[in-house]
Picture 1 (cartoon, rainbow, N blue to C red):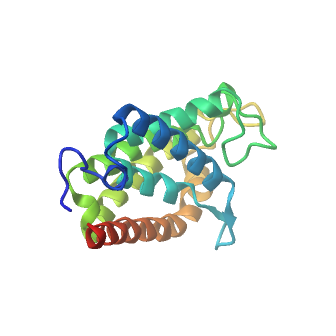
Picture 2 (tube, rainbow, N blue to C red):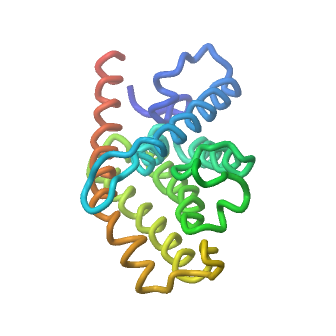
Picture 3 (cartoon, rainbow, N blue to C red):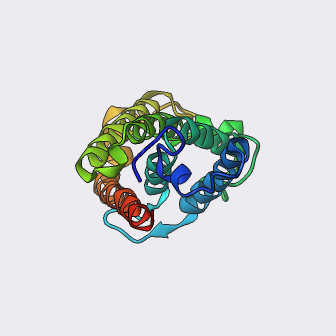
Length: 205
């Protein structure tokens, strides 16, 4: 089964075509937000800091959904958090809501929207069938997330002390470097998983 206008990405290729596209989008978006919330809560022991599966989930969903649905799903997920639902990694003990986005992780959360668009756009072009191309797109997307997260954490984040920003050196030391290896692992897994799923779909078609 090759990408077509009716099933250009994985999530739509495995969806029954008799179901309304609107129903498809709503169900997939809601399911996607549930996956993102669950992935934020799962912490895996890793060096030098425990890692969640959230980056993996965003990457995989974007590759499976395509740019439009992936962006809508991530925005809906962030909106759930803004409404006060405990869908983020540190909620609880932190309280979700609009103020949460002003904290240290706000830049990374907003960066997920850019990540969804970059990886989803790659999937729209068929890159989700190629491990090297998908991996490259995910690396580029993750770099954007890190840049946005670093800028916010270094100079704009509202800290528990009442100050703003950790400064560039501390943001690099505590907000980026400890997570690089874990993100590389999650990107590698996502870049392998989606093309592998496509191969299964092709065999059954």
